[in-house]
Amino acid sequence: MSSVGMEFSTDGEPIVSLECRDNEIVRLSSTTHSHHICCGFNISVVMTWKGDKPVCDLRCRQHRLGEEDKFWVRSVDWGRIDSLVRQLAQSPVPAIPEEILVCDGTEYELTIKRGMNSVVYRWWCEPPLGYEPIGHFANRLEKLGGIKNVG
Image 1 (tube, rainbow, N blue to C red):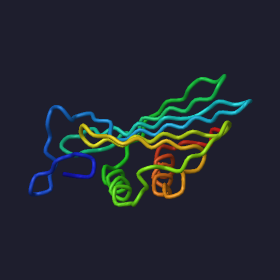
Image 2: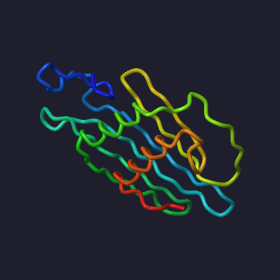
Image 3: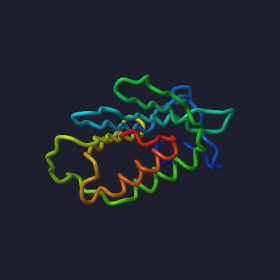
Image 4: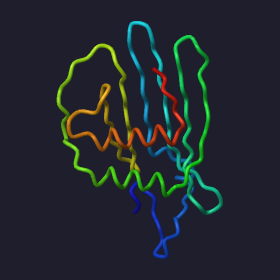
């Protein structure tokens, strides 16, 4: 089993089944809230197939209050996403984050799926103490998706 629930044969080739031809494996969302601005983005990492090879499409949406949403898709090599997910999976992260109270700022939500299981991380501005690997993962995903500063 790979880090995101994909099965491989003994010779390393992916085992293709009809139920996993188009599978969202990661979703990152961000929204900035303040008295004068509301903007953000969504990146959905979807595993698809080109022939018999897995690829990841980053389906991106960037929004800003009063402006038309922008949508685009970037194809990324499966190995890059798999490597990022594997690094995060091996990182020690506290089970329960520290408590913070905020009003204005940027809210992030990262969902990672493995088959029928998923985990959701949510934070404001900077990841809580101990969640640095999650922040690093989110930053790398933003760069791969081509997200420009929306704030």
